[in-house]
Length: 172
Image 1: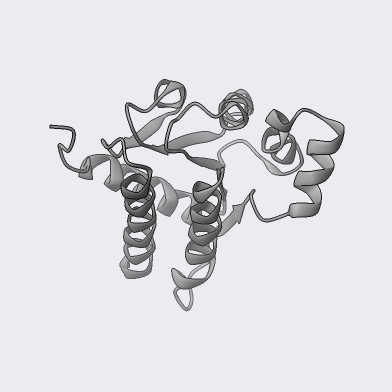
Image 2: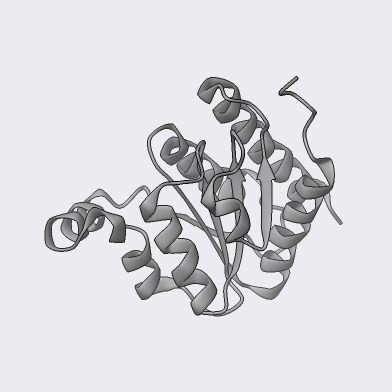
């Protein structure tokens, strides 16, 4: 039986980490490839806009999948594996949070971004599928959707983003 349920403790820890970034004025970077790139973009929008509470500092969430000009400039001049780590070179500060979203957990550009983030003192979290791949052991917090179906994995990753957004919006 592949499905053993969603790790709600990991969801809670991720929500607390995002809330801590908000309280400390830290940035949250979200990244992924393919369908996970769309999820990363959606998460950044929801955390930046939908989770806002009047009178409270907004979350500074940025999707590294959205700047097509920068991504293609990097991909043209450097290996494609650098598209996220190179963006982080410009933006990342110690204490920021990097959230990597991947079905397989084995994308080289995400692995390189996780390594870079750790080397700069950032917090790292990953939303993964299958068995978590290489990323599960490279990040501070991994949340694995225990399925081998990309559609199920991607849908639950999006759902987790909505849960986090609701949590941030509702907290006092």
